[in-house]
Structure formats: structure tokens, C-alpha cells
View 1 (cartoon, rainbow, N blue to C red):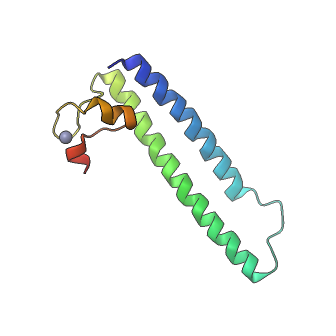
View 2: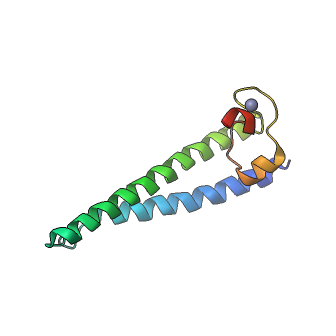
View 3: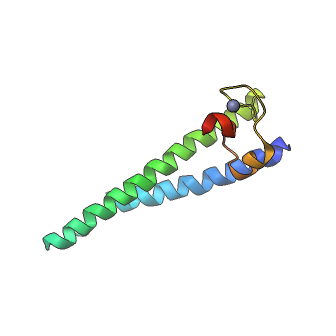
Length: 107
Ligand SMILES: [Zn+2]
């Protein structure tokens, strides 16, 4: 496994998630326009906000996992399962570069 490649991949993913997070934050907090007067429309807006907040929570949780993976590259423990200490399969890391546990332990 090429750790430089992994790091590059993680950093690219990190950039993507950071800009997604910023877009979502802007969407949630940008309130220049007055809220819809109609109550039905307002209900729709609320649901949308909740969806956006959920997306934001996902993005933030992935960002944390990416930072954790980058720290593990620096520490030399990347690719080792945090639970059973055995190597994480390459194809799993290919699919989920910030995985910190093997399939067995994550499942
Ligand atoms: Zn494991």
C-alpha cells in the first residue's frame, strides 16, 4: 500500500467534505430572505433544514474520521484494525480509505 497515495486521497476527500460542510452551513444559516408566510411552505423549509443538518452531521463525522486516518498515517498505524490489531484488507481501504477497523470488527 502506498501511503503517499492514501494521504493524497484523504486530503482530496477532506477538501470535498469541507466545502460541502461550508455550503450546508451557508444554506442553514443564510436567512436574508424572509421565511415563507404560508405555514405549509414553512413546514417544507423545516424538513429541508433537518435534511441539511443530517447531511452536515455526516460530513463532519467523515471529516473526523479522515483526520483520524491522517493522524494514523503519521503515527505509522494506518491500515491496522484499532480493535483486533490485525491488518485491514486493502480492498476495504480502497473503498473506505478512512476505515479504522476491519470488516469483522466494524460489522
Ligand atoms: Zn478487527
